[in-house]
Length: 347
Image (cartoon, rainbow, N blue to C red):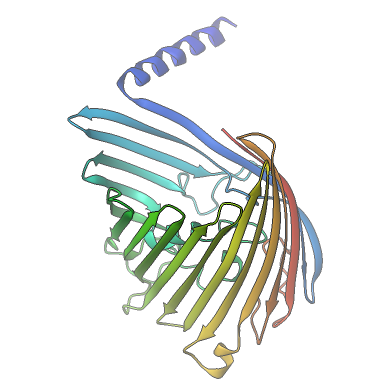
């Protein structure tokens, strides 16, 4: 007990010293659900899963006031899988974000691993936040591209909001990486997002380009999105043009809404993936997804939720909701349906 008391005292002293120099916050989200997925030609599978309402995570962030309006900050954020107690499987402990920043009236300069402008854009225009059985990422053809949502080795500038105008740009050097690589996810990326948000209206455009192989092949993405808050209903949608120069093109459409009433919220979305710009066989591989969800907020930090969704494939497309029977692939052109019920708690 004496050893425990000594350690506790030292930790308290260290925390007090740190807080005297800057503000440091421990934060996180724990989201666990029971999920069932049924795929054509495979059958059903039930799992304990994660990330139905929000992505599970924990992290540390802090800010130090340097005077004259200048601040320094850091942000370290890791994925967690509450059902198994594991973290990101690709070896990156702070895979969600690991950045250091300088902030002031000029905006923010941020360095490290972070969401790309073209990736962060999608989150704001999807009522399911791209995750869970209803997320728009379920039928995104090029989601395996390392910079689809985040980039290593990045340098970003986030402009201060002027009136309703906002924006950010990011570059990430390839660091001399010999491509293709199956072990190092570093890629040369450049992208930006700019928009206008004032009152009930939010509209933005985004674009990104990533070198994906040693011959100069690129993954390019361009999108436009908008949201309108009517009070009783919040409408949103986005349209993306994706192109992988070594494969083909994809157009992605997402339309959705959220309807809050008291402690409750209804979520719904329609997503479509159209393969274009390739052979007749490639162009036939389209898919669509319908999703409806319900959220009951027990408090500001805790919520219960349920979601149902169905993917309909065409041609040889094999999009499926995550959580299907391991080692078995959906029948090409078949359907994938799923539901989940879970609890989310934030701290």
